[in-house]
Length: 285
Length: 292
View 1 (cartoon, chains in turn orange, yellow):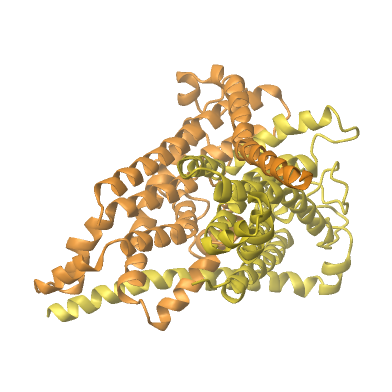
View 2 (view 1 turned 180 degrees about the horizontal axis):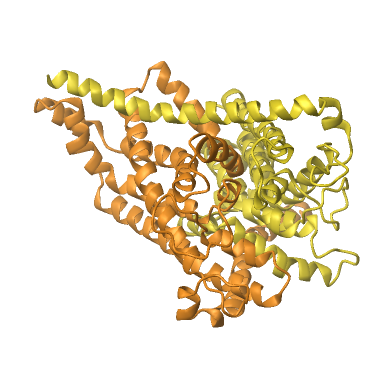
């Protein structure tokens, strides 16, 4: 009898252990965030956003860093979205059973596991050196595009997969070709899911640091870039630079810049979640 | 006319897919060709067995062991942190929690994965390390323990989410049979469901390890930049990834030995993650239990 009781107790105990650990990670993250807000919030003002970098912590701003991030984001959009969506369409709609598609699929699974810093080495050799782009915005955006391509492709495929076959058949029945069907029927129907995946992939690109350091993005860029061939810095690199200095004031600057970076990441993730929910609710096949 | 246009579109789409293959080939080619130059000057035996890594000093040694020990030390600390927590979360969410709770909590856990890694590095350096210093004597301001712990928190969602999928896929009939024998939920979870999902859980752990090995910013910020051959978590260590960052921050001339060392370090890193990814893929294919 006591055995039964003991087993019951273990069962109840685990329930609380489970709840505890489920919130453990989130609680720690919360502690971190509060800590950052206390450290950095008072440092953020208009000047911080519009000042160029400086050797004096109190005068240093993140103008070049956030404009660099915006540039990288824009260029990565232009490069990665068309390629990623096109590859996703090919794998899901055209090459379902053929050998090329199978190889590509296996390959994408493998690429998704390659550490981001390796992409940096690829970019350093191919874009920076062989294509002679230097440590430019374009080289950075190309590198990050390759990095997030697998994410966009997988998201596109998932979204296309969710579109029911009846839609395709109806379109074929009206005499539409395959591409007309995809362009006018399938893509619009899958657009919510694709967009969600794209935003999540881009939010990952915004936070990437290591590959951009490897391709030679600089920590100190005293001007705002005005062409894709300019040298650049981004928010994460600026943060890394400030965090690696011993002076306390630079750590405060780092905390303030982290608040801006997290704001961008969380807003992007929020939009993605919102789109996903809206899209799932609206369409029930 | 229309047919040929359709064909052109199809080829265009297929080419986009091919870019991913070109990426893989590019990575392999770049790593091989640059580290080829490295291994012509450094014999493989001293790369593997020399116990010092000092390419940036006057007295040059090219032994990868200190970087490997740094990488494994931080990875092991991360895994020891993440695996128990990740699996407990997975079991709780899959077996105990209400459906709504599960649906609401999962996106919250994903937030942990969405935070940029440079932010985790800051946490490790400014929050976790001072905290550890308050009760562990002899711990440096850069140390493997703090970086490993924070990396562990970072990969909790990798393990919990994949493990939970595996647990959830175990059919109801197994649980019901266990309940019918008088087992409690706890006994059922850990003696029936977890073993049935073990291949999926193993895959999640392997992917977590691969993630930790390749992680860069946390270790570059918090673990230090001194390649030391040690297994003492209180000491500063340098990982493969942190070394690549350290060299990249300087002005590296193409063709110099420093330039080649980051590719030699890179190919070592790539081999490990490639191996782990393929093992996990193989386990998934081979051992995934099929239930009707």
